[in-house]
Image 1 (tube, rainbow, N blue to C red):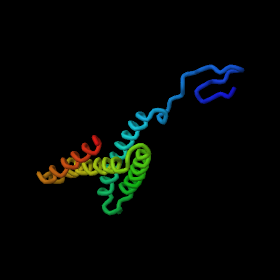
Image 2: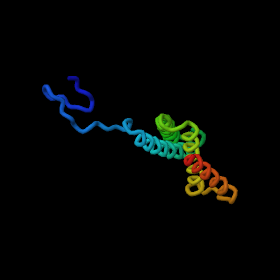
Image 3: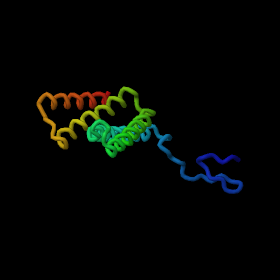
Image 4: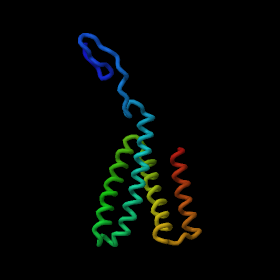
Length: 135
């Protein structure tokens, strides 16, 4: 008798134990985790964009290091999420989170202007992201 990964080998008998569950065993869990990772990747994109602005053209060390670490994490999480999500959807949502987030940080943290045209542009990006997610 060969023990499998779902059985515990005890002496000469196979005793059933609760099956090992992993994200890979359940496609819906894997897809849900991919969306969570994609959201985190988008949030890291906002962080690296803000840190890049604060680095003043890479002339300040700490914001430059924060940018590099956040950028690496963002790309890494995006890559992992693309194992389960379509390329076009994942990339569009990732860039959209970054674009809307950078816009919001610019307005609320950096005091950038919020004009009707900029607000409409941001809303169109959100509408495109929602449409892509629903398709």
